[in-house]
Image 1: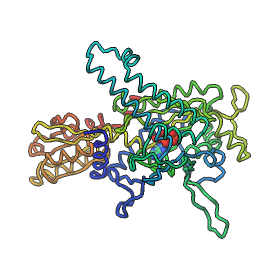
Image 2: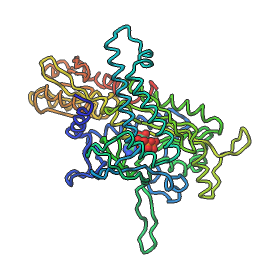
Image 3: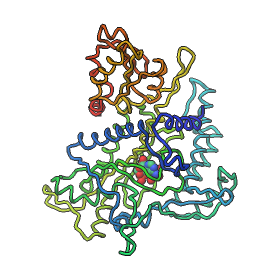
Image 4: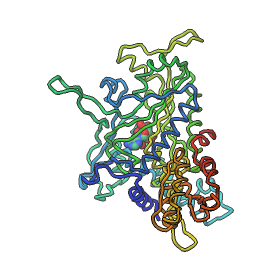
Amino acid sequence: MTQDELFKVLVAHCKEYGFIFPSSEIYDGLAAVYDYGQMGVQLKNNIKNYWWEAMTRLNENIVGIDSAIFMHPRIWEASGHVGAFNDPLIDNKDSKKRYRADVLIEDYLGKIEEKIEKEVAKGRKKFGEAFDEAQFRATNPNVLREKAKWDEVHNRYVAAEKANDFAEYRQIIIDCGIVCPISGTCNWTEVRQFNLMFSTSMGSTADGANLIYLRPETAQGIFVNYLNVQKTGRMKIPFGIAQIGKAFRNEIVARQFIFRMREFEQMEMQFFIKPGTELDWFKKWKETRMKWHVNLGMGADNYRFHDHEKLAHYANAATDIEFNFPFGFKELEGIHSRTNFDLGNHQKFSGKKIEYFDPEENTSYTPYVIETSIGVDRMVLAVLSHSYTVEPLENGEERVVMRIPAPLAPIKVAVMPLVKKDGLPELAQKVVDELKYDFSYQYDEKDSIGKRYRRQDAIGTPFCVTVDHDSLVDGCVTVRERDTMKQERVKIEDLRAMIEKKVSLTNLLRNL
Ligand code: ATP
């Protein structure tokens, strides 16, 4: 299966098993908006809990808030979103399809990178043990030719990005012969700026309604509450404020399922620090956040940092944590050193003094900020795409198993009587009563036990507990583990501790 096909299969699987549905489906859907089903919402909540507890419980100096989506419209002027939250868009005149000009160029560069990697893989195969990768990359004519092409386009792209030169974006697209995937032509419009904020109006028009924006990020709700939290919580710098909430962006090209949505959720933390200490804290938060990801056991190789070459004018360091999605390494989380840009601007626009009095140094200053910002939905996609596995079975059949990290699994345990008679359902109910206060569970008595196992594999349930006739006599049940399919007999009263060990969020947090 190609990665593209795998992705299609994953999207279908998510729908079939109640993880994610297209929004408003009976009305033919709404582009780039999705609903979470009965499984998806639990996975999402578990991810949010893992983040929230890691931030607010493991760090004495980080507290959480929940600010409103609607905010005073001046906030978006102060933050720069009214003036500069734009994407460069370009249309193909033949297909009438709209694209992001920067994404077209980046995809083109990505294809060159793929070609280079293919050449290297060929070399590795050809030369076997004697293969010297560094030398191959430095001397192979095909690699050198592609690399030169990459360098040239990349340099032009970076320069155009820095200068906000949209005519040059278009020229690069034309010079590289980048065509529209639908029409196959190079018949492009000019590149235009497009603001990504959704707006609506508040109050009745008779009263003179106010133009209000749906927040494009949760961060500003934190900045405008900086003084409230610092004062009421008696917070001392360094300290952080964390928030999970919805954000809205009118994305031009919303593709790739829940990777790029128009309504999505963010988990953001703003860490307030003394000016001059930002690069040390930036490094510390890079490490802390990477550890949080790797701790889930989805393979350290599947993450990498991508440091930004072009920094926003207010930032003095920025990096992305990229994840190996089915469509390649892409941004999962951003970590930014934002200086005092936001607080400083809110001070200017609101006329309220936003400063911190440092009792040790006996001075006041506007704090600097390190931000960590991760999309909940992208995290859900990372987990789902990594977990989806098709495995051959001994009997020649296949099973689809979602190897979701156990503490994030929507359902932790399934309880099943072997047959629907002889007192087995009653005993199974007793097992449910033993477990339901601690774990999300499903009770299932329909179909053969094999079919029931398959259903649980498909939603990633770490444990299946089967009650059989022997259970009535010895008080033991068969526990089958999802990944190994190993089965063992366990006393009913020992079940809780056994399951807890593997699925508990506490243990996951302890390992951080
Ligand atoms: P991209 O370059 O992919 O558009 P971004 O750099 O604009 O992302 P940020 O503004 O740094 O993203 O937002 C922080 C995080 O929010 C991202 O790392 C991502 O996980 C998430 N995010 C941003 N836009 C979307 C979206 N349209 N759909 C889902 N998640 C998003």
